[in-house]
Length: 279
Image (cartoon, rainbow, N blue to C red; front, top):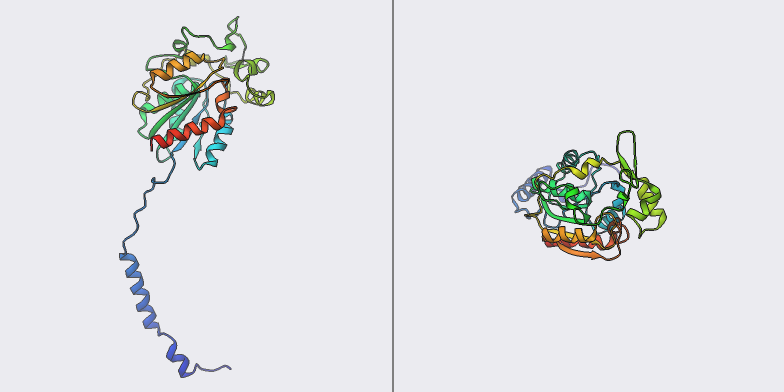
């Protein structure tokens, strides 16, 4: 039935004046109620920064990235130019600068050289993790670190070119015909071929460029030694890890690529242990 509301209906309808008063009271109460203190980083994982090596590319980290994402970690995978140490350090710094919060820097092979240098200038680096990687001290070259140890398999005589293929700019890749034998002998041929195809051409100047200041003297580190590596002698890896006082885990039959592929699950656990230990 249409028409004006009855007196009974008017009696139970709050007036606009009372509604305004109630809203004002609630707004004042909420504004003055103590807000809960929430730490922006209390439950946050550090960002994991994965730096690839020479004759490689960011895609090589695919299995490690998948494992870390599954466990709730955010990852960053810079793409190095592989033309020079200074430019690769600058590339990595530029990628990290916009990323807030603490970071774990992970380096493979030449990527270990890069993260050692990058970490010297970053207060947000919580830990360093190396897998089959170079750990230079200031002033040392990759060539220096190889003295007294077995040479890389791709340097098989005659050198050059050994097992390297050079382009018109003098940049090199490992010949795909030799890549699995030299770099990834523990991998399925299809996966090794995919890694070979993804190689970023590399300047051999990287082998002879002295390191700048490094962070591992003051930043805790972890090292995954590849026990069957044909690029960096496992004895050299052990010596570098010992000098840096790294916590060491050995992947007994890992190739140079085995630490982030065949042993990806174990490497993920090692990275996460570094994150928890330095929280």
